[in-house]
Image 1 (cartoon, rainbow, N blue to C red):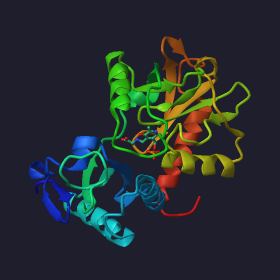
Image 2: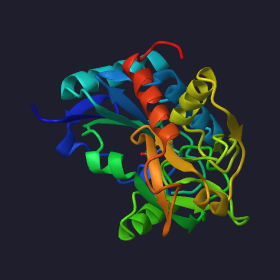
Image 3: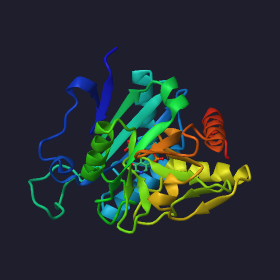
Length: 287
Ligand code: PDD
């Protein structure tokens, strides 16, 4: 059974799935996207992802390509056709196809592409050793709260991480504070056991995993602070970790050349990862 993609109203073989050369996503990165986890065949946090999609589209004045129920239907049909049990749905909406001109086109219809991908669980080595991250300057624009497909700084950051044999790059603002990873949110645990992550604003993406983990942290009674932390504070922290729809909750054990804590995945991080997996196992239940 060949893998299929959904492109502007049709299910097509993935290998032949294509958009027009004048799609504004291709020419201007004029579009937004979402990555939704599929866990045991179920979409995790589908509503919050669709809320964020609508918000990103609103901010850019792009219309929803179809109704929410229709989007959900397409996602389910694609998961069914591709028989995905664990993986992701990738959903991209651009302003559509129009002759190249920076200003919004008069009549373009938003273009929708959806794909799925089966993913393997994280390797035992990554889980046992934890992830290494490197620090890079945050050179992105001032609206990182919009999940735009304009990801060049993130691409360069992740490539720098890869070349340093690291899993992720933490972006650092002009004042020395960590904003977020190239495709993850950044967290630390202080010596006193307080979980710290940056408060939302236009400098970071409000991760859906972040939002669910915040609720889990609260419901389990851990101490939490939503505030900026510096790279220096992170290097001296007891534990560190990242969150995203593909990393879930993943321990960070090294930042640049500095081991975090004792250099092994932190105990609290391990508990939070388990809480998050329990939450995914119960998919759909409120936290
Ligand atoms: N990235 N910050 C950035 C810059 C991201 O790109 C992402 C997600 C996150 C975490 O968001 P969430 O918890 O909703 O996945 C934070 C996706 C996975 C990606 O680009 O592949």
